Amino acid sequence: MPIHEKSLIRPENLKTHDELVIDGVDVSGHWSTFIEARVVTDYNEALEEEIAALPGGEYIHRCWQCGSCTNSCTVNAINPDFNPRYWIYLIRMGMESELLRDKDIIWQCVSCNKCTYACPRDVFPEGVMKATSHWLELKGHTPKSPSMHFDEVFTEQIVKTGKIEESRTIRRFFARTKQALMQDWMIEMTKRMLRHLPIGMLTRMGLATLVAPRTSNWGAASKAMQEYIDEQEHERAEALNLAALAKRPEQDVAA
Ligand code: SF4
Ligand code: SF4
Image (cartoon, rainbow, N blue to C red):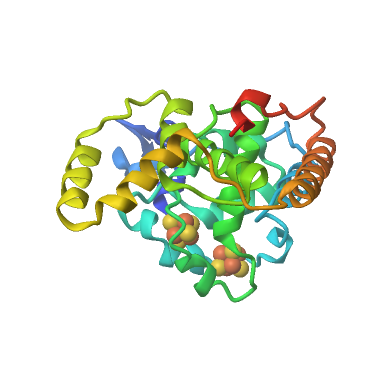
């Protein structure tokens, strides 16, 4: 049987013999390449349910392994080890330890959604990639990604004020991810803005980083959104069997 996805064969599982003669035929070297059999005993039978409990993972059960997602994937074209089809297979089989071997590249999905358009079963593979990255973070297998920090900063600001102020968002994102505020690209962008944008707009953006404007009468909406988020996080914590999802610190939410 031809092997279509050679990248799935771990180099450490390939065995060759420098000198091997079988039935009088010399099959030394390349001709004696074998793939070592592996035995999986540590299945996580709840893995598919855990991923399905996170936003984006809801339709993973629909996958029929056609491979269209991987074939169309932007990142796979650069790195064959980035393989959404294979990870969906591992999740559905409960092969957690095998999935963890790729934990450092799953977050690299660029959310181009080519896979989503190619998928004949409406699995939303992009969502599954997001859910899997989120799962890795919640289970403590990987640190919180910059993307997750950004989502949190964005959500907190909406819940608190009903508005998004880009300058405030980026400042908080940099603080959360311990990055210097003044970066080369930002200095260049500011220079260009000064050349082309009205001073009034820049002043308002600057002020918004200090005093967060707020949508009027936002209190009830903010409370309802926060209650919904808490409820969702509680459900996810139960689905993933986590004692408690870390509550966002109050100072982060403060406008
Ligand atoms: S959304 Fe992610 S998984 Fe889907 S094609 Fe783009 S990079 Fe690949
Ligand atoms: S394209 Fe859809 S059905 Fe096909 S392997 Fe990917 S997720 Fe599964």
